[in-house]
Length: 406
Image (cartoon, rainbow, N blue to C red; front, side, top):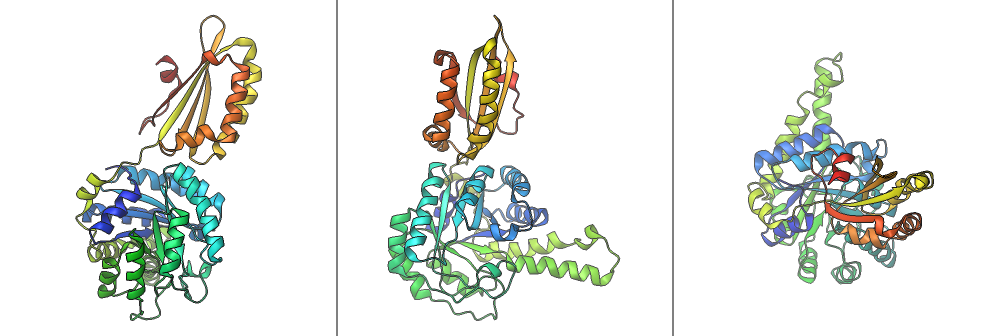
C-alpha cells in the first residue's frame, strides 16, 4: 500500500469516530516496531518525527529509511514532522519527504502564532503538504521532549480556535484540554471535555491530542467522540524501550549494544498494538486506503540540445542550479548530466524531483527557478529546450541514457 495523503487519512478517522496513532520514533527499532504492528493490526498509522528529539542526531539520515518503510508498508502510512521551531525546518522536512508538518509557536502571542503558521501553510499547501496547527499550550514537566514544553497549561479557546483556523487555513488543530507532554504525574489527569466539544462543534476538522500517553480508556473514548482523530504517543514507548535495556544490562552487565536491545521491538509492539485497538484504528486499513489519495511525487525533465562551444558556459549554470533549485520548497533533488549527440551537439538533461505534483506550480513560479530558466534561455535557443512532467520513477534507478533516448 502506498504512502497516502494524511488529510484523507485523518478525515476518515474523524468522520468514523476513531483515532490514528502518531507514534514517535527516534531509531530503526521504533520504526520497525511501528510498521510491523500496524501491518499485524491492519491499521493505518502515522510516523511522527519530532524536531526536538533529533537535536543530537541528523534528521536527514533517518528520513530515507522512514520514507522507504512507508512506501513498502502493507497498510496506509503518513509521515508527520512535529514541533518544528523554524520555518526553515519545515521546508527541510517537506524536501526530505514528510507529507505533513507542524510549526510549534504555541508559546507566542495569538497574532504571532497566526502570522507564522499562515506562512507555513502557504508554503506547505503549495507543495501538497498537510499542516497541523497548535493553539493553546500543552505543558510538561518530565520526559525527553518535555524540556522544550515547560510551563503551565494554557487551554485552547473555542472562539480563538475558529479565528485561527479561518485565517491560517490549517488542516488539523492540536488542542490543549488538560494533557501534558512527558510522563503523566498520575492516572487521573482531568480533561476539559466540555471545552473540547465546543471546539469540535465550532471547527468540524480533525483535532490532535499531544501529551496522549498515560490516559485511561474512558478518557480516550471521550476524546475521540469529541473530534480527536490523531493521538501522539512517544514518552510511554520511550520508557518501555529504556526499561528493557536496563533489564538486559542488569541481568548481564557485560552485554554489548546489540544484546542490550534484545526484546525492545517486541515490547514496543505490544504497547502499540494495545493503542491501535483502544483507539479503534485496528482493522481499518483497507477502508482507509480506498478513501485516501496516494502520495505521489513528480518530476520535471528539461532536455536541451547544445552546441559544442557552449559547454563551458553551461557548466557554470549546471553547478549553480544544483545549489539554488534545491532550496525551493518541494524540490527534493536535482540531477543533471550530458550525453554526446550527432553533428557536434550535446544533449543536456536536468531531472528535478518534486515532493508532490502540486509542487510543480510552486517550482515554476519561484524566483530561483525563473532566474535559472531565463539564464538557460539566454544560453540556448528556446526552441531547443524540451520540458516534460511525469510521475516520479518509483523503485527504479534513474539512468540518463533512458531519458535522452526516449
